[in-house]
Image 1 (spheres, rainbow, N blue to C red):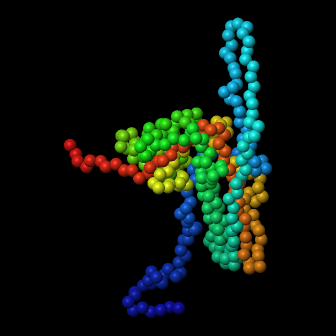
Image 2 (image 1 turned 90 degrees about the vertical axis):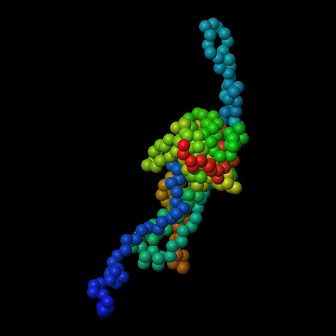
Image 3 (image 1 turned 180 degrees about the vertical axis):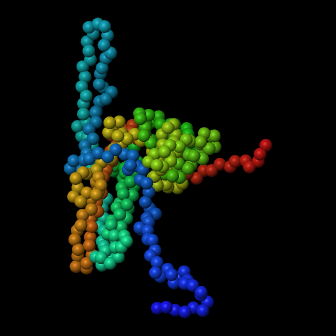
Length: 309
């Protein structure tokens, strides 16, 4: 219906917008992170959801000799296996997504409501996956560091000396440090104070601080308690006897490795349900594949003189 406004000589913005189509974004979820740990691990398919880690029991008892130019007797030896190896069972991160059919029928343009609901739910599940890879009391990184691979900071704040000490624990082909962003910032402050700003490296289109050529990879899943956190150093890959991720291949409704989405049906209230499951675990193949720097203080700052000569 046309209306007359004495004060207006042309169509107003408010009225014109009634005939305009607004460009709508998909739903933005602030909790989504890059999940670098998941990207940097090697993922191994696991048959029947079980991964048995076999180790050698007597590595230092294996006898060998450097042959001399004589007929000296060669040593006899054998390599024993652990008779009770550890078995890793895949853990499920799951939920049931409910979408009313009226919503999906009427309000799916320009964005499909079911796809958007699935996308946001899957992102949340993947965030929980990374949190479990770090913090799970059974298979998480922090729970599987051997006692001899744990060290504490020298003065509280993470210094270059601390990270050098950590590198002595995982000196065989270390892959990356894993730290909370606040811990990386604290390390950067200590480097600045010493006049040794850490160089950066570009990985996956993102910039990372490095120390001794090893990138410091951020993850907000590392716990911060009382102003303190931990920094992990790990070696990755099966061939390097490092840390590996585990997943179940060939799932019904598989969307990506270890992730399945299955339609469960529509109930009498016209609500459609979808079962979303992600099966994963993590294994540390040998103890020296991972080490942790503990008691890392993230709240220390330095005062600098504000005078000039």
